[in-house]
Image (cartoon, rainbow, N blue to C red; front, side, top):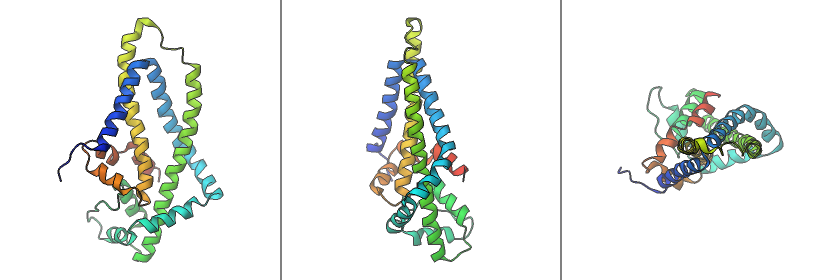
Length: 229
């Protein structure tokens, strides 16, 4: 398959370019604060996500609804047969699911149950993963808002003319890094959509891209979330 630059690549480049531009404009001190706040928001969101998750389960019907959506949109029979295959057999991409999610399902479920029971377990696990992603986003947004307020308070830092040029250059580099982090967060949300069998045209666009597909397949945030399973 010939890979060409498509909309997904353009979006990735625009986000990183925007981060670089804002970094050059704001300077290194403000971008250090932004980077630190972004990293801290991600870290804190991972810690408070387990606290938000049971609240969503207890007070909403999201888990049941997600299970229904997954059953309607994903070929669970095909996925169950792939997981049911002999150990060591290669697992192919299925229904847009990230390879890390497929490997997690294989470890969690294994091949020791019948296909019907396996399909039910797959839908429940996928719904749980989707709910974890939603709870992570809620925590991330809350923490970011808190850091925005702190940033406003510290907005006077970085206006010293002596370090203006170095400030802008280093700020551009940090802005690009923040852009990558934002892309990973956005693609974490895409994993939620793909795990429910929705928005598959976006998945196809990612798979045919030059750059965006690697940021999707090697998402550090998703990898860390799976490590916590």
